[in-house]
Length: 508
Image 1 (tube, helix red, strand yellow):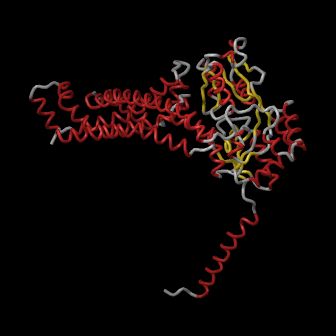
Image 2 (cartoon, rainbow, N blue to C red):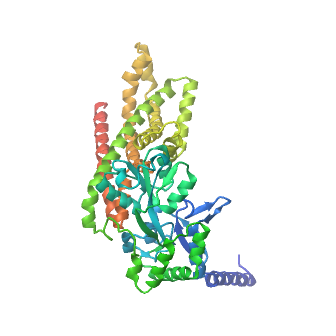
Image 3 (cartoon, rainbow, N blue to C red):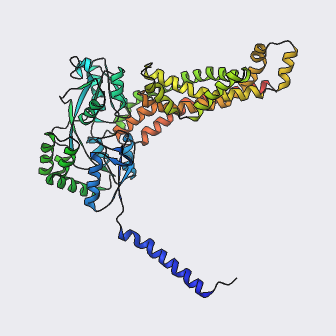
């Protein structure tokens, strides 16, 4: 069918208009300034507004909006886990990152970092009953001290671990350390005074000593090649320091103190001296060099990685043993039990398979803490074991039901009891059928064990994350971590294949 000329002309006009709109749209509007932060830590840094969860509030939110406004661009928030902010900045997932990001030499060596915009103090928080016992890290010899992983405070605790014999406990967020302090799982918390003050207002029974263990500064980061944007951010921060805009923000959040004027005076006075700005006076030195060469870092971290791999292997084997024992019981109950028992066991399986294992770990460790306070390793073992028991039970149930009915009838005719039939006829054949999926489940559990780091268990993936953060690269630590996981999982897979081949030959 031939299209009329006037219709073809109209189509061409529409296409031309579409091209004009697409090309002209960016000209009339600035691209948004994407800024990365972690809303999980909450106010006063970044959190969802309780009255309108679609918007963020916090002093870092206001500083990001101030930078965006003075750049003439709209601000757009990008949620990034705190532990991944450095990696995301290098990837270019956002333009600038700020969420209580600390100024440490390793970060300046791997990213384009701004001038400091806030001075904080690392302080010790203890329970009210211990306020007269623990004043310094030396007082906490042999005690468990918590902090946020990948921070200056964590480096300080690692050093104190060597010097004072404390036990450093790393968390993925800055809320649960204080909850565990109240519950008695740790004896103190070392974190920024900003976080400590918020925790003390939120949780009764805590006392924060005002004396600083060390001092540090918050900065804004961007990709290492994005120095032009970093320089623009520096100019905006200096201008905001001079005209009182930053002071107004921090006064709004009740965070202005005498440390800030001294910091701003140094930053403004050293505007032309980048070296002086990079390491402001009074900042505590990191226990590690600014950029540890991989050749020097690997010997330091390899023993820790091997210990963490051993923890991963022990946890996985113990959790798998628990899962197998419970799975066999659940499968047997569903096959041989009555409707009531079968219904209850089916409900358990569906609940455990239908909810995330991470949620189950949180409930076991934190949710039932008022009733029973499980140690972190025990909670991790129980959580993984209960979760995988549901999956194992389905494997065993299907394997039991796959045994030919004729064999069961023959056993009954020969006078076997139900228990004898299960033990001598049905279970051995079902085990052979279940072996391959059991092996797959163990490998999956080995990898899922990385989730238990949220319960302060420092397993292989968590230790690798610490390694990667301190050296500023995930390549070598990631490859080494993968090699260790393969070294643990491949022998099991090989053994399972050998057993399958042997049983296959024996039954043919």
